[in-house]
Image 1: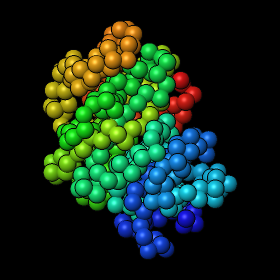
Image 2 (image 1 turned 120 degrees about the vertical axis):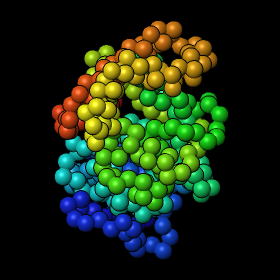
Image 3 (image 1 turned 60 degrees about the horizontal axis):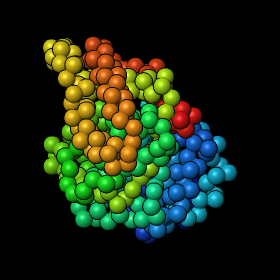
Image 4 (image 1 turned 45 degrees about the vertical axis):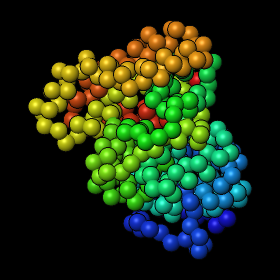
Length: 334
C-alpha cells in the first residue's frame, strides 16, 4: 500500500495527481469525517472487499492529526490519503476537494453511516464503470430495520433503489452513495462545491451531458437511518430547506414564486418516486402499515422545508451545520 499522505485544501490541488505506483486504484472512496470513530465501521467493511487492494480511501477532514494512529493500520487498501479542510460545515466542499485529489477514474461518495453489505460490493460497481456507465447506483438495505421511523426515512431517501428492484438503466439517482465517473463530474459542474452539496444540480447537469446511469442491485449497501422523532422531522425539514436553497441559488424572483405556489405538489412528487417500491417493501417484508402515513408526514416536512427555502436568498450556515451533524453522527440518533 502507498504510504498515507496529506493534501492541504488551502493549496491548489492538481486535477490529476500523480501516484508513486505505476498502477492507479480502480475506485476512490470519498469519506468526510471528523474522527476515526465515525468511520471505523465503514472502513471495516471496505477492508473485507474482494477488491480492497484497488481502492483509494480519501478522508476529508479538518482534523488530520486525529487519524495519525489509524492510517498505518489500513494496509489492505491501494492507498489512503487525508484531504485537509478548513472545516466540515460544507459537505459539498469536502467532497469537491477530495474528488479533485482522487487518483481513480471513478469515485464513490461515501457516508459515515453507509456500509458495504457484500464483499463484492466494490467489484460490482467497478465492473459496471468499466462497461462505460458514468454513474452506478448500488441496491440499498436498511441497516437498522427494527424501527418504524428508520424505515420511513430510509424509504423516503432510497425507496427508489431498493436491492430487490431490477437492474438496468435509470434516469434519476441519489447524489450520496453513488459511484461516479470522475471526469464526467468535473466536466459537468462549473461550481463543484455547489453541485456536490444539496439538490439535483449535478444530476441534471450530467443528464444533459448525455451521461448514462446504471442501477446495480447486487452491489448491496446498508444505510443507517434516524429513528428518533425530533431529529427525524428536523432532518427531513432541513433536507428540503437546503435542497431548495441550492437549487434556486441563481433563479429569478419570479421563478422562485412559481415554486412557492407549487409547494403543495412537492410532497406528491416526492411520494410519487417511492410510493410503489415502498408499498411493495411493506407487503414483502410484512412491515407495519403505519409506515405509509409516516412517509406522508416526512414528505410534508420536506415540502415545507423547500417552500421556506425558495423564499430565501443566500446560504444558511446554521442549517448546513445541523445537517452535517446528522450526516457525520447518525448513529447517535438511532
